[in-house]
Image (cartoon, rainbow, N blue to C red):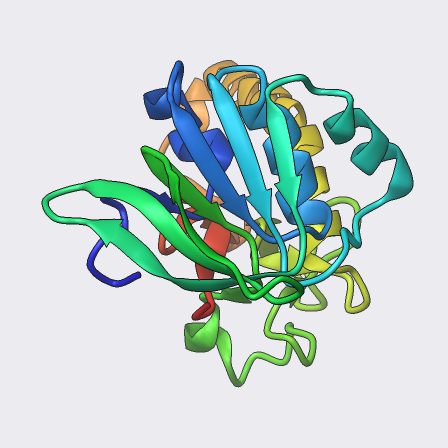
Amino acid sequence: EEKFSRKGISWCAICDGAQYAGKDVVVIGGGNSGVKESLFLSNIVTSLTMLTNYDLTADEVAIRQLKSKTNVQILTYQNILGFVGEEKLEGVRTLDTKSGQEQVIPCAGVFEYIGLDPHTNFLHGLHIMNHQGYIVVNPSMETSIPGIYGAGDCTGEGSASGGDRLQRRCDRRSERIALSAQARAVNEGHGERKGKRDERVSLFCMTGMPSVCGESPQGS
């Protein structure tokens, strides 16, 4: 996994999916994150194979949508034995735990959705994070400390799953674009105040991998 990190193995289909357009990919993980990102990828890749340790655990609606895709194959009860390739990733070696059969699934890229950790250690001591390390914000992206805001997938409400956060990421993208446009309009309309601030405002917004989306992949 370490050998092919960012050289065939990714953790963000929205970020890296375009480079696999017209190619064969593998998605590891059958939760909401894996299924919903697979729905996105299925529209641009030639074929997609999903590998899970057990049955799919995502929302039933999302599972039905994924199963309706003609270029998607779902293989359950698969253990990942390793990744195949020399200079570049060429496939995934798996073990079917029911039949005991090993196989290599050829692919140009792998997307892993088996757990996420937020990159928020530098905020310890501010008491604005939940027990999972996600910044707790309200719908206005405000933390419990006035003037400090959180944005991106380093934020959460305590009980939200990684899949729920991932789904919200897509929904928030258009909202952030609108907020950025509003902010520019305000700045342009108050040009005479350039260089002056009424209050100190801090914004923690995580994007990119491994800090992509403010989260890093846990080991498989």
